Image (cartoon, rainbow, N blue to C red; front, side):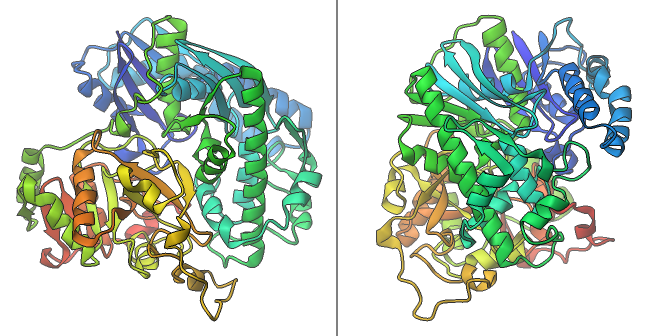
Length: 612
């Protein structure tokens, strides 16, 4: 039985196809349309999934599942607007036309959109609740036969967070935290206030936090919320604007924190650093409290997580080190894109009662390599047609050659195998550098990624060598855990301390023998790389260790700021030529920047990207 899961119309639209419960393909629409966080119906992702599952044009899956129940969401919006009336009229008038013309008619809209994709629409069209989709995406692909399940995000229909329990092929909710009392929206409020884009810049806030001190943490706990020991809380809505306005925070919030929100792209001051650190500390506190409650009421040894808050890898690392659960597993596509997967799995297992097998060790995400790939013949034909100079490597020479390029301080863009599903690049669509270089973080941020200099890069490390570099005793294949760099690798503080308010100076200050991946607090967001799911990337790390004695590479997503991760060879070449990358590796083909013709575009491409 083939089941198509769909998420769309809010942000991060995606499609997933299952075949008898096996994940065949999954992709976000943004990767095809090149519009970051694209919320439109995932037409191109659907076509890709249908082709990957062997479903011919004019045929269709056995069932289609949408990842939430729009009628319940509309009920929440109406009840909220009525509760705050007459305030919120502008927000209501903006939202109502969209609902009346599109979102209330999602079932017929889905049927029409599928028909336009050449997909035969099945009779069976299911709707799962938003947090049910998150929970199913967390539990069903996990390694565990039984687990507590925690979902936390902005909001679904009414739920902003749930504690549930998964056993075999069944899942049920035990507790629920409802709108407007949302940890995800609280974090997004600070994202907005510090000048970053909501639903896009939260990870920047997390990266900024180590530069500050938690001086506002008690103020947040005492004034903005009533926090209970079990992790439940109520927000003081007098300080927020998302109920009755078009912004996340209001004038009272600004007065509480000493002035108006930071202007986007404005200078980051000590206040923003301290606010970031403070809300991160509060978030970690709440996550730990809820996790303890989940352990208590479920009695399970393992925890599964999804929802946007589950992408806060700093909180995840703290949760792991707290030892509340024996182990945790986090859905790598934890946001709304992963809801498409969870919706399909919820129907297959929970609604249809199909069994599930697990071994407490191996998950079912195939390393997240679930997107398109491109054959040697396809890539060569495209390169030849475009006239781009290249060198082709034998498979045996590939890893040592690319490793040598990186060791010689070149920045390399890599397109390798199937594209990853979710927000992390894991060696399929990655930009790679040498972590031993003290200048590499600033160089890659400013000259390659075109983004803020303070943002850290993640290390990819051979799985067998992780504990030699990081205080981490288990695999972290999806780059969802932050761990401390081993003390033996840290460098003593500089004799003359840098200015604590000078972000660029602090970025360039070496803190370990791997300065390119060591954040200001001696932490790193770790990806462990084993030989199973991406053997070529594993061979590259092995070759880099043989070349340098270092089993770690800098790994960042193959894109520039404001752009989705690249999908095709054409996307990769465009990004390569727009930036100061030195080499592009398309499977076994290597392109040198100096050998390429000068790159020309009619307009400034940066103007087409919505910065986050």
